[in-house]
Image (cartoon, rainbow, N blue to C red):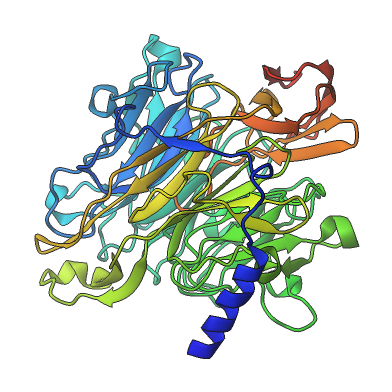
Length: 560
């Protein structure tokens, strides 16, 4: 085994030689402290960008959790941007501190189509925070109704509870707890549905269909997305990937299952799904999606061929980059290009995010590494915690990694030259334009672990890495749906500048429980003209805007 690992490292190094100084024009500055978001007293999990108060700048929500019975007063944080990249904590003021649970997953979206963005949070249980703990908490934004962006917990009123647990999510132990969570309009009716992952391998994930009246109905079984009916367990602390992998107009589902095979569900177009995982493997019979300890998925077109590729952050088992061959072959098959691309990081990854950090027109990959080892702690005496006596504990911090896209199917590790290290015991990470300069910035969360009040690993603070930019041109696109879901999730945007064609899709979640900025940034390199911006909305409507000037934010609303 040791010889094999050495060989893989050697091959990886051969694929990731340091770039010439004039190639990767990426440089970050650590502004964690001056931004006000350092927050060294928390245990960061997921991070999400969104303009919750509609003031034109992007805000940040971070879920915080602790795996121990010693709680330390931890709660989630809503960081409000003052427009200059400075943030203040307004979580308790706005009603989203999430004091009833240990935060994991996050997803923003306008579930009630009233024009403001709501928030759904995945929770793990904590016996010291009371009995009324719900696995997925839905916070309704009251901005439209009251003029103030405060939030109301409407989880029970909305019916976002499994039918077998109508009163208490803790019935039967902790089997109704949520890890990853994501909005998606899987049936294209214009209303956002919710899928949440369970942290208990003996209990299935849950899909809730939006009824269009502010309520939800659980449809996991009838929709055919039960993981436990297949070869996998349902354990998934990272969010699922919702994307149309075969481009048939229907939203498919990729469920990452931590410690067991991942599952790819194809949308049949009739509100049901079929497990097609085995049908997407190569002739060799190697199941491409059964890639190990997946902590979520990152989605994006890394080779600009028009289809969506997949990157798995895989804990301590090595990350995997899976290329979609739809464009090349006409069939939605996949190829593992991890070694050839130079992206097989072994640093104990939890989170990942894709963005074009130098605006050269190609998606780069940033990985948040936790330096994790699988350690069994059996000194927790509370019998209710028996499902959780085995968990990951950070043994030592890991170095985060920035993979720069070379534009030829390979990547180069530019972490050091870009000042993007963020030495961290990290989990969640997301990309977003904090200061509105057209270049994506990075927020990565940090954490520590306690067991019975004993510090196992030292807290590492949250990181805000501010992109210093370069001379490359760009255009930013913000979307609002009408016939489609108002948040425009899974709309496809194509920017054409001469022979340079880039397609991006808007996703509701990324990596480990995180959400990228919904404003899509398209890098143009040195190109000074944009021929067209095309949007394919989830409704099927095609919309085109011609002769767009670079260096601006383009706001596009779906035609009625």
